[in-house]
Image (cartoon, rainbow, N blue to C red; front, side, top):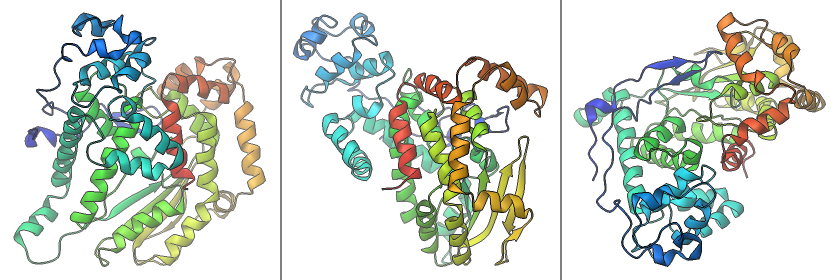
Length: 450
């Protein structure tokens, strides 16, 4: 069992504020300064394995797979080598070679390279995302070295949880009374709307820091390649801890569909009224969402225009149902607020404060615009943004209300796509992500549940 350094694991990482106010940790709370998993089986692949890889790989790996032959795997040959590696029996130690393929070709997600029988998983992914997730979370699917890494990550997530919920853990051990409950914050909004910034002063679990923890143990593998693996590890941790710890946990997710909020409220409701949820709803115009995504580095989720516009559409179309859900679950939902980005800041449009059962509307026009938006107007905005061309004039107008430092960051990011439409720019930016297809499909799965 890997060893976890409890003291180092809970050291708070320095925060880095991005230009538009979104907060990202330079180093994750979970992954900072942790002991790396080691495994005696993850040395070099054994003698004779390269002969079993077939003609496509034998040129690269004659005889014993050495450091030199590993270095000869490149983005043009990695998929061919990997296709032969996955055919080998489980008794063969192929982890290092598979990892070399991942590092060489960033279009390969870890679940395709580091699992047994990835062909079966590919079929499941096309047929049922739920079955796909369940299979990846099950035993004996990942290579032993990766199972070890996943387990170590789960252990360190527990360390973070214990640090935040110290009083609750102590009451479990030392008291016969009820466990102290901390309320759950649900932040609803599209990718790029500022959910992480809103959660920065509280406690939340997100897949980004799980991916960083995994990445420390697999240096050279990119964050997008770890997207599905990080999601699976976090889901496994959340579901297990919410059941065993008997407390709903805050997760950094979009919550655009009412079903996702309802499920979280169901978990909270199982605690017999001792835990509450506060829901904060953020609406940002589509143009701003697009420009924020274009400003993101490649270690964050990069969506194309289709995926991002679907998030935008869902945030508007499902808001009325979300508000109705808030009203009918007032025993569980302690408060609600809706804020709208006006181009330079978030304006609170409506709220239901703790102890109240009525939503107070501060700006009726904005409330109606963002709660009962005409579907035709939504499509009109989507088409207008899709075809908007990025040029010097556009950048100047878009950044006109920003502070100079903020404007400079956006200007630098957007200038790279001068002459392109917003949709074309997002596609090019996403291509830097390499494995954006699986990322986008998982985002859309949350937006439009099956």
